[in-house]
Length: 257
Ligand code: NAP
Image (cartoon, rainbow, N blue to C red; front, side, top):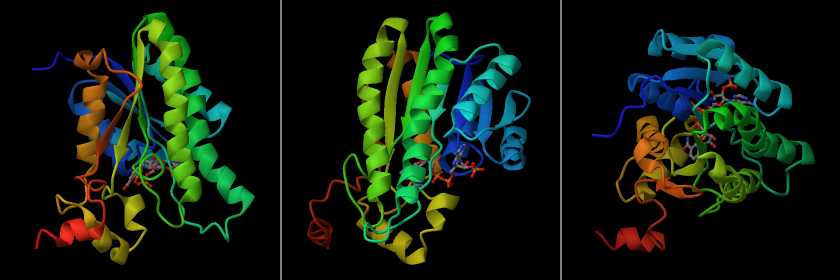
């Protein structure tokens, strides 16, 4: 029903596993050229192989200017254009405020937030030249909407992405480039698995739809924001969380029983 995006080129950062891998595979199945980015080339290559001849793997650390530039150059070299950026790479190491070091804080901010500035800046020349672009940030419910002990640096980085987006979207609108964000709830990925089975069970119990999300749930929202039909949407957020942020307390879920 939606107009085809086939033949357009998407860069997906953090695409070697988890949500990024789901986005890359969904866009690849929709016929786009896919640039699969992560720091680990071998893992990105596996995903690119899964997608097929319309995908290429690129090793780049998107928290550095050199990495972001190399990523954009590789995309243009291979496919000749950059139409869509899914800035998805992120980390979520837990550290309570009383133990958090300045280095840990900087590491999370640089990887999750500064990378958005760097990768958006790196793709701008190609998108500006084409006069068309879609940028989709993977933010989170944590920070923009909620808090969780151990993730104050993470929450700051994810809320910061939205502050960055709201001004950048205004600046990019005259170039016909939109920028929006997806706010995932708890999505079952390799990264989330590291939080342990108790955490996962507690999250499942707190989600009205009674399951963790899948990378495909996030990929579908990203694909919509990339679509021609989403042309008039910019600077906005879509929360994809199975209703997790809706109950005003656990009592709201207990009241169902
Ligand atoms: P994940 O399974 O740990 O995957 C993270 C991806 O990012 C990997 O491909 C990793 O590959 C890459 N990456 C990390 N640092 C990088 C860097 N500096 N440069 C380039 N690539 C880098 O994580 P995930 O759960 O899929 O999360 C993906 C995004 O969704 C993150 O932004 C996260 O904050 C957000 N999110 C996740 C959830 C959830 O429940 N899973 C919820 C809300 C938001 P390398 O290590 O090889 O670089």
